[in-house]
Length: 93
Image (tube, rainbow, N blue to C red; front, side, top):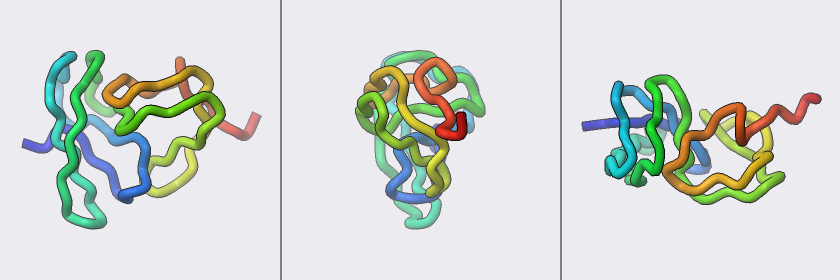
């Protein structure tokens, strides 16, 4: 079962495509551009359509989604955590 998807192997977050992801769930992450599966364990509930971190990230690191810079980390993120507005902000302002 595919739980989350990402486009590019350099992506640091993936998008949940199923409901009900709970802590402890081993997530199968499909890298679409390479047709490859990687795994990460969910540390928090991840709502469908939301992002999950694929690796640990420190403050000020760039976050990549769909191969594109979507912002910077503003609070440390662990692999498997929910990645959203509480720990990622745009670089535009």
